[in-house]
Length: 133
Image (cartoon, rainbow, N blue to C red; front, side):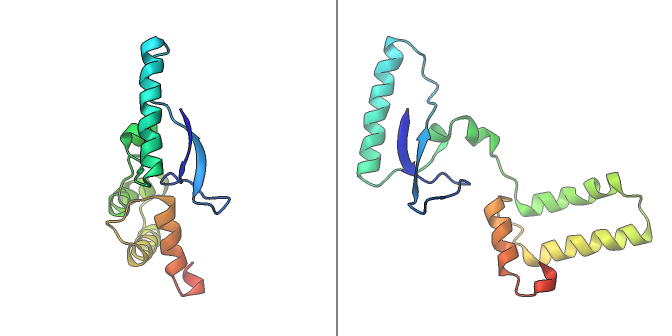
């Protein structure tokens, strides 16, 4: 199903219109019954768009909803120490470096925010000290 829809979460609005054309996979079989189901879905989608009540949900995101199960920034920070010391020998210097990275990230981000690129970019842009960016 192809439709012009509001920008998908995590997608970029290159034209500045707030809308973009998407191909939606509804996982409907390619047979006569599937065609009828696709027409019904198209009418339903048209109603939502006309009423300006369309919202992205698992039905329209399809497999992407499963793939984009984002962790919070706090959850990533919990994993950070293990991952960091997989590639760095644990010494006083490396522990200090790790703590520096960890504390800066913790200070300038909200640990309950989802770890999406938008949230991370937003956190960086809010930093008023040029040296900390």
